[in-house]
Image (cartoon, rainbow, N blue to C red; front, side, top):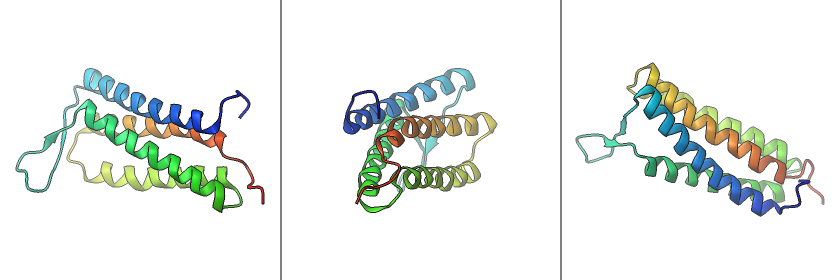
Length: 138
């Protein structure tokens, strides 16, 4: 990092930016694609409507887990940045493909789901990857 900020400052800003980005992507999807879907909850007959709060909390949770993974990988693996990027992309693919295959949604809804998840991924890659060293010093 060459901007003078600490890795933790950049990571914290990334966590917040990912949540804001996810909410903005969701609001755009709602406005442009008229998206309104819910998630099934065990014990409930009707799906629970997705809201900006649910989107923000989900993005915050994923972002904090991403930060945790970055901190762990920085201490344990020889190439923390490459490992973290690879792990992030793998988690994204393993998460998004089943969602897109199993969600009962039309093309607009699928685009909205993809948009929100991709925004979170992009923000986290931008914010977290530069905080990790290319090589771990011994």
